[in-house]
Length: 82
Image: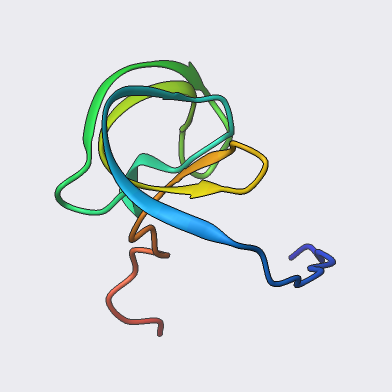
């Protein structure tokens, strides 16, 4: 029951395998791809689901031109909406 503004811009990136990459953004662990290994994190209790911040992840990442690392394959992990 909330709104969000989303701005879209094309950016250049490279895919790479990383071990123990710190991702400082808030992430939903349920949205991480199956092959991504979540090793350590700060837990943020935000109903209806907890989020992680400063996650230590191993797997495939997008490295953006500005150096930001984002996990490859994140998705809203809901099989079916009612």
